[in-house]
Image (cartoon, rainbow over all chains, first blue to last red; front, side, top):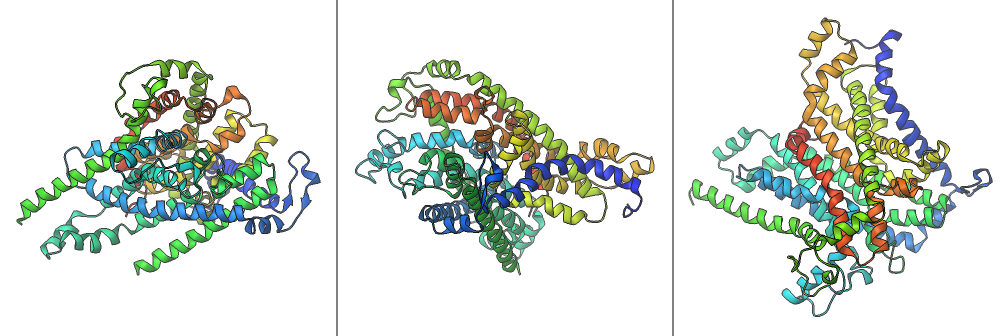
Length: 297
Length: 278
């Protein structure tokens, strides 16, 4: 096809672009810029014209707020742990399921089940399983393995609360990571492995010199997408900590943003928090892409 | 060890690991199922049982009769189906432009659309809330439009990869016969991209069936609530009635399960055609 020159050639292009472009501008680009503006104001939701311009003070307020710092720490720890564990377990599951095993489809579907459950439902489920007095987890730890001598009150301690939240994300996310890796594995030509075997490479060598390098674009994709997802954790934190309990020490960045915006109606502060998060996400994604590119060379 | 023995041993080991993993995956789901059939008196029994002593359907009747649960179910179904169709429509048209047409500025436009994958969806909630107020969209239409928008970037990216893998020969033949771009899109590209489309259907259906954050702020009218909101509120109102909470939750999982089972056989194949492959 030739590069478009005549006006009539533009018509089909515009028709195909139009629905997506309208939605994207109206509900994505527009809101993004609007949000930037709000973040510089003490925004009055009922009378926007009476909003007071504050410059960067919403941002300064967030960065010096200990609750925000704690939320950032929680979110960062949660993201780092869940992403690393999910990638390792996901790759392991994908490698296992890439063999010609009878019952392979069954395992694939079973491992994917947690992915299709909804966040609200499984957050409640984990809350019930980690219940202090009669939860399944305490029972297993106490009475079966005797790891602990008395019931652990998971949701009363700001650090322990993160345990069920992190385990939930790993439980729910491994299946998806595995599917993406599995798709990557299936695009590696089998001849490479045959050639390696002829040359006397053991399975570990094959993993290191063939599989891992050829899975690089899956790994890059997963790292970027999983980190963005982790930094955006919201539902599990909201439901399991009931909005930062105890003592506002267990917020994720987004539960804090939600509380600021929709409970305290401080729209400017909420918008500043969400922009700070976006900036984190943007820079972390850039760093990841750069590191992963270097590693490949 | 000989090559054969080594292979058998490897498979044996694989099965052991896979079954162990399966235990971790399945136990929470099974525990939810078991609890939904327990009478209320046994919800906090010690020791907790994975197999209820007595089975009852009371929780199902109680939960489904309460809180307009049937209505929330219908609302979610309506929103999820409409979102899936509209996302498929909008994203596939965009992806067709990016995969097959040429015009100046195409690459930059594509990158602007990819921004949607970088930006945390929740940061948009405040301004989306204000836009929705301006357009009086605190209703299902508002949910459908925002959900579609939030899915555009990722699904367009996936579908562009899929469409680029469709061989060009067929289209060139059709072009010579004078086919319009619409005909090429509708008669050639889409039918040949079925596995990729299955991935998009699963992604968007799951997303809209379970979306919580936007529905939580955008829906004011109680009769318009979707399931995730209904279930979360239900739990906060009936704190210890876990049997009923899980009965409601399990019913809510049925449609997702059906969509997944219908489309799963295209799933892995579909992902490998989307261009995220290794």
